[in-house]
Image (cartoon, rainbow, N blue to C red):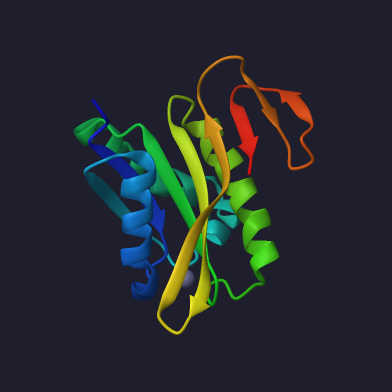
Length: 156
Ligand SMILES: [Zn+2]
């Protein structure tokens, strides 16, 4: 039986909500998404201090505890008002955000997703990286290099 809940840490931007909701429910085979919004979450997770991160993690914890969510999707997107950087930079931030979150959420599957703009009202989410909390506890960087660590990291 699929997990019923996953957690989405996404931007406040209303344009990306429906495409991300569809992508995440389909990709994770869940019925519901608990949604935490933060302007430019990919940048926020990578640049915030420990207190800021703890504040975000408290929100994630409610979803994990109350709804037994075992997956967290962290999002970046094109044309982000709070984080107006090029797509390449979004991708870099998403990698770093996933690694930072995984350090604090060792039992949670972390997915970093970028929603690219494909037209006026067209957003295409795609997986940038994924960290899965199961053996053999190693990960691959973007060049396919394997590192021993505390999680499996699959570069996409
Ligand atoms: Zn945004």
